[in-house]
Amino acid sequence: MSENGAAAGYSVPALAFLGDSVYEQLVREMLVRRANMPAQALNREKVKYVCCEYQSAAVERIYETLTEREQEIYRRGRNRDSSAHPKHSKAMEYRRATGLECVFGYLKLCGDEERIREIFEGIVGTGEE
Image 1 (cartoon, rainbow, N blue to C red):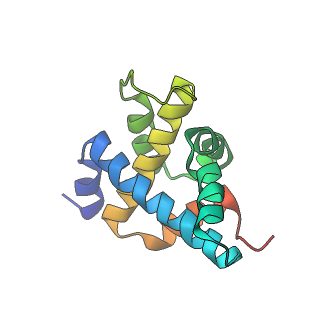
Image 2: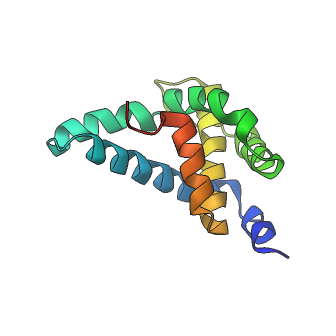
Image 3: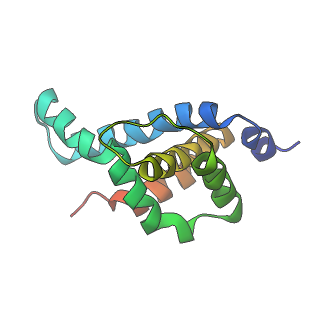
């Protein structure tokens, strides 16, 4: 089995667990690079990007740019049956965010840092606005 095939074999919760941290680290790095501000202010900004509502909307912006394999991983995550979701969000938003996190987790396990950055830039832009 190829490395990509092995990475795809991980469970949805495992991919989302890893992908959540990959995505959040990218957000944190972006915010620090944009402005040197107190941690409390950085955290307030971070929450805007890591909430499932934002991630769900991000999927709509980048879905067509995903490869066939990445779309498959996304759908696996999105379609996972989970009745648990934050009270402040809709179930479908949470499921889309989980799917996106799965893609980031999958790409991290594949070692594809360049692709991770490409997708992240598609979500938030280059950070130079």
